[in-house]
Amino acid sequence: MTVTPLIIDTDPGVDDAFAIALATASPEVYLCAVTTVFGNVGVEQTTSNALRLLALCDREDVPVARGADRPLVYPHPFRATYVHGSDGLGGRREMLPALSREPDPADAVDLMAGVLRATEQPVTIAAIGPLTNIALLLATHPSLKPKIGRLVVMGGTLGGGNVTATAEFNVWSDPEAARRVLTEEDLPTVLVPMDLTMRCSVDKDWLAQLESAGPVGSTLVSLTPTYLDHYRRVLGREALVLHDAVALAEAVRPGILDCTPLPVDVECSLGPARGVVLADRRAISPDKPTTGRLVELAMDADLAELHRFLLDRLGR
Image 1 (cartoon, rainbow, N blue to C red):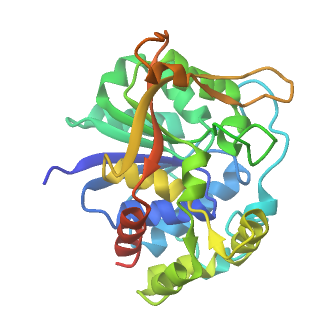
Image 2: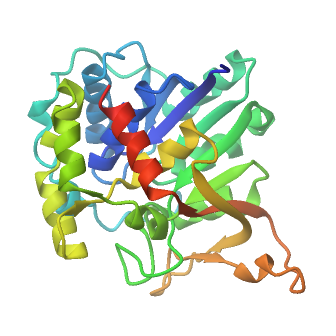
């Protein structure tokens, strides 16, 4: 089996915690680095959370580097503490191992660039937070783009948003960065939007199975009460949405999500549509030609297969 080098760029985040654990439990990938960015909480906290989550997964060999603490252009209006708690982990970071090491002395962009230079295999980058670090990497190290085999992004929505009426949190947090990455670069890219991740929610029976599967699964479930309360209100039922873990599943096992190539754009105005991802679905019809870079947009999945895959890996 070919093992793919993987970098995770993240803002942990309860669903990011599940995603990091999934990567460490998947033999198809080798986790080379974790880089952090502002988002659900500030970058100091996301960095601390990443270090503690890797300790939980017994992967303290993985370097963690602190990245951007703000968007490229405009200030970040607010954090997602109403979903993820004041510490990003539902107010329950004490359930994780204590900090035992410092972040890598390199910053996020330098660490990613170093991994790309050192590897002989194409690297997958899973970007599951705001895209600021990725935009900076591609702008400052364009010669390294051929080393990136695939970029898997969790972000955007084609329907209603979760942070405004129209926008999803990761893209809305830095629309200028998202537009640069999704429309101005020529990397093979999969975009996993909120429309799909919301449909991939797991129920309390799934969580109970994970909790009983082992210490990592039990700890992950222990982080979820605040997050579960939020989605109980949003969905009107007992269910949890693992946005970033769904995207990581595609990074680990390409093709587990059904994708359609479509041209996309990102709205960067300061009005109510800021952060909207516009996908031109006319491109599906051959008699309506469109122009622009194509992104593989994850539109569907076999939900039962995906749930089994996540439970199997996270329960290891």
